[in-house]
Length: 339
Image 1 (cartoon, rainbow, N blue to C red):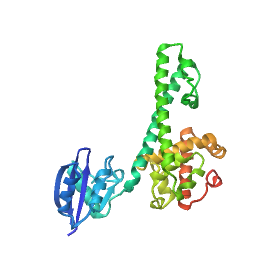
Image 2: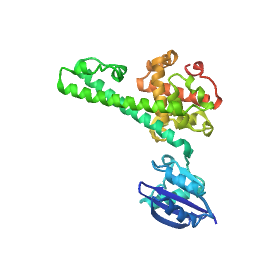
Image 3: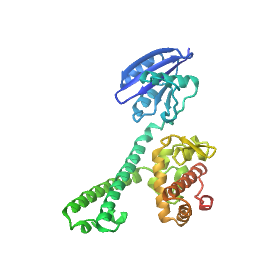
Image 4: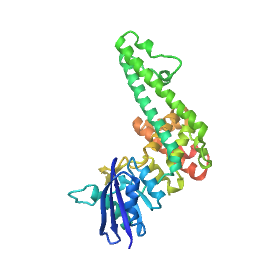
């Protein structure tokens, strides 16, 4: 008899459910997040267990790795693509766990990619870098606003980021309150800049772009660090059958639903990889600044719409170019993109 298991994973506990091939509920229990306790329960049915479903929550690594190490066939469920039974009046951890098992039994389970265990730590380090960059950007925008409100001029981000020269303090020195706000902001920005650089230095010494990803750096706006980010967040590009699938995974595809020219709502904007979305957004901004053809394309879009749509369009183009470059190991061809 074939059995199917679902685990509703939380921060401190997991709800384990098992059904048989007819959908009958065989086992249910709430367990602490202890891999020994969970594998002991599953081992009672291991001979007939077809698979174990774990939802892709923020803390799935330890559970999936532990189950795979014990020889279980593990499926990582994509929570943003899971549909609950319509008309449910009540749902809880037990229902969620059984529904995961039921979707596996019915072969309708939307799954995610189980990223190789050995490569996750370096990927998480790159994610930490992107987090620090975002924090620094928010601090710089806040500081720019303070300067603009009080001085009537906008300071360039490169001037704010300078480590060897403080160009902020002289502008705000006339008022002790503003001077302190400027000092705190500048010190925080400098600290983050040093931390970002330390991560970049470490990564450049430890990690190289794989052969099939090396030509990513021929794309305008993408250097080694962004190339590594795209490589590690993408994984094997072969898992994306079409360029549209990759662009959607990068969150570069509109989630608008329309019918007969009228809006019918929106899809799940969070479905996809937020780190790839960030990487291509960063690449688009750098390409717009430093590449003539990318800037010309952006300006053409900007003449017809607003800057946010123009920026998103450029990022979308770069993500599509990256797909073909990774798949075919081809050089970037601007004439195929910016037309």
